[in-house]
Structure formats: C-alpha cells, structure tokens
Amino acid sequence: MIVVELSNVVVNILFKAASSKGLSYNIFIAYGYVLAALVLLPLAFFFNGKTMVPPLKLPFISRLCFLGLIGYSGLVCAFKGVEYASPTLASAISNLTPAFTFILAVLFRLISSFSFSFIVLFLFLLLHKAP
Image (cartoon, rainbow, N blue to C red; front, side, top):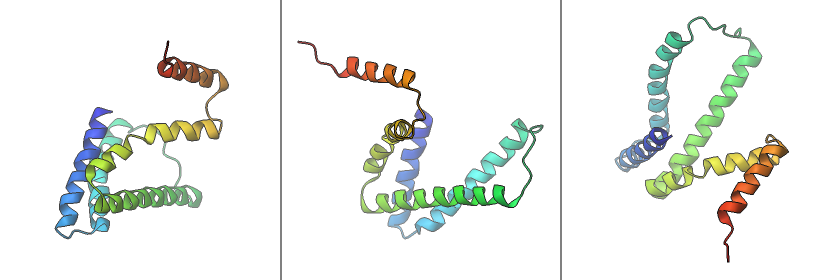
C-alpha cells in the first residue's frame, strides 16, 4: 500500500511538472496506459499462462470498454484537479478512497451486519473519550 501511495504521489508531481510545460492530460493518460500495458501484459502471460480466458464476445468487450471509459474519466477528473490545485491536495484526497469505498459498501449492503457491528464497535472504542 505504501508503494501504491508513493506511485500516486510521483504521478501527480510528474503530471504537474509536465502540464506546466504544456503537455496535455490526454497525452499523459495515453502514455500511462501504454506504460501499464507494457508492464502488465508480460506479467499476465508469465503468471497466468494456463488460466482459461473468457471468449471475446460482444458483452465481454463492451464491459472492458465501459471499465476503460470509467478509468479514463476518473483520470481526467484527477488530472484536471491537479492542474487547478496542488499535487499535495490530490494525494491527500486520494487517501480518502478507502473511506468512500467503505461507505458505499455499507450503503449497498455488501458488508454483512456481523462484520459491520464489529467495525462500529471498533470505531466507538477508538473515538470514545473517557472521562
């Protein structure tokens, strides 16, 4: 998790430096996708060589395109925010992602009531101020 946060900070700083020299965020995102493909595709073939891949039919391809569109939209919003604010603020906001994920999981009832009660108890004990 430390490596992921460090990479987010580095990408935010690199983008701020590149955008101040005139690089478009669309080009920066394209470079990021190309670099990710060059790194992850050989690893996928190396580690999951015998895993069955689902057939490439229209529903599967449309889901992949939809996920790519969501990822691209998120990156556009993030990099536009870095253009207007500082990379420090973008890194601080990205630390809220686990909290938003937890809130959405509770709202959509993806967390069972048993584990939710333990989480509430833990938060109560953590935040309770004794006299």
